[in-house]
Image (cartoon, rainbow, N blue to C red; front, side, top):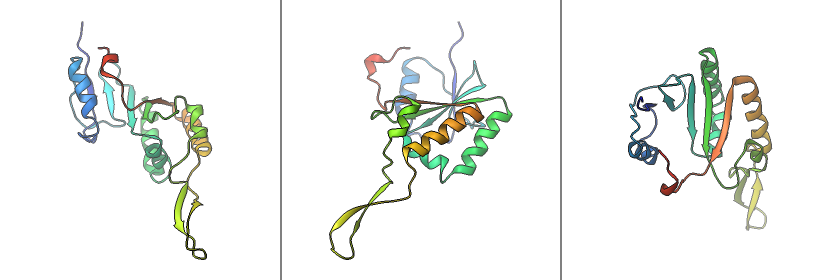
Length: 163
């Protein structure tokens, strides 16, 4: 039986993936580090399926808004090369399926400021993206770009780790 090999993109921050690398080591998974064309992780047995890890919905939202051109180019590059990207979003907090994104409360949606008239602090709505808008964008990307979005909790108890 061949040994599982998962290539890790060299742009992944070591601090952010420490637990992932520990789990790979615990399970005997070889994990060379070098630059990937797209995404963060590639299984040598299936190089046309790439995992792109997002630490939460805020990061994903930032990618589809502020980094829209870069994000879209990455999806197009994957599509042109016959690569399917699976986005693994480590969000938790009630987000288990793509449909749950509709109810996501963007932390940038509300801003505290001082009322110039009363002097008291108040919450003011900003133009930051809503969960409903993000959901529509992600659905379009799934449909048109052969991308998938899966949501997981940040921490998986070690006793549940199966190699």
